[in-house]
Amino acid sequence: MPDAQDFIKGWPHQELLQTEQLRTALMDSFKKGLDKSHEYLNYGDPGNGAYMLGHPDFRKALAEFLAKQYNLPVDPKNLMSTAGASMGTDLACRTLCKVGDLAVVEEPTYFLSFTMIRDRGMDLLGVPMEDDGMDLVALEKHLVEQNGKIKMVYTVPVHHNPTGICMSDAKRTKLVALARQYDFVIVSDEAYQLLEFEACNIKPLFYYDDPENPHVLSVGTFSKLIGPGVKVGWVQAHEKLLKPLAGIGYIDSGNNPVIFSSCNLIHFLESGAMAKHLAVVCKDLGERCALICKKLREVGLEVFQPKGGYFVWVKSKGKMTGRAGDAMAVKKDQFHDYMRLCFAWLPTDKLEEGIEYLRQ
Image 1 (tube, rainbow, N blue to C red):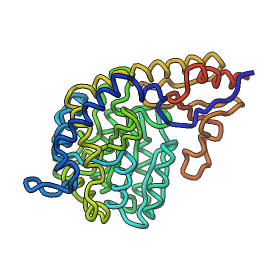
Image 2 (cartoon, one colour; image 1 turned 90 degrees about the vertical axis):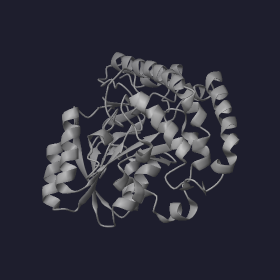
Image 3 (tube, rainbow, N blue to C red; image 1 turned 45 degrees about the horizontal axis):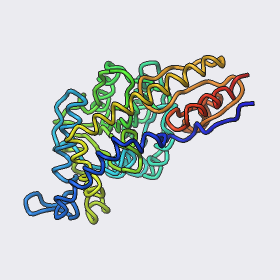
């Protein structure tokens, strides 16, 4: 009899983290990082001042890398280095919202966002997901009913966690228009923006925003592209929204928390090694995604096959495995018979065994 397997962990499998290509390229980059240890180990320098938004060298290298990936212009002044997507989301909650405000999330969504939002003393409202992203009719209904109390919308608009859905261009345009009309900020969790298995040509939500009246923070990370232990990410936003993020107490006192670790990645980005590694990751996880979807269909389950990300979202016909879907609803009152399954962590033989376990 096949055994149940661990589909809960949203982790990359260990083989992805120990390829010779990755290790050699990172070692070269780490050594290069020490060439400017007088800056990269400091709070700032006379020419640039304090590195509150991140070291200028890293922000420039990141901008050039992202511009090539997005095929769009990226200005370093619109980037802040962070310790990952969670830090970007947390900073937005703490600096742009206050206790008692309301935030809207998709249902289902990345369930740990609830904790970050509630930690700020905010309350949550949910709106359904549709085949092309967040239900904006339901969102606007909340906006009208709450009469200005909604100050944040948290969305995962690309390779959505857990459904895999990508928000349509029309909905992206409409969502940003609603943010201007009703005066709320959008935290766009784009952790999987670059982790795609086929070309999707989806722009980060930042590019729909108005620099004169900005409402969007596009939050990115290398956690899913290199590895979560690297703890380097970014926020892309227009300066009016970006600068307040560096004004909270622990950055005002301690400065940007990833100066050294981010600068150790500069050569990795500039040399093209990151782009090469990204291609390896996308190919590997794309094959695993195709495998798990094939196996799910073989055992009689229906599945939407995502074009990127880490997860598939599946309705059970009896047996359950992975993360139970009710955790992804604000009140845990929906999706009791759904499963979020991560295909990035398990060895492929265990992945197949774990899906065979679901056969009725």
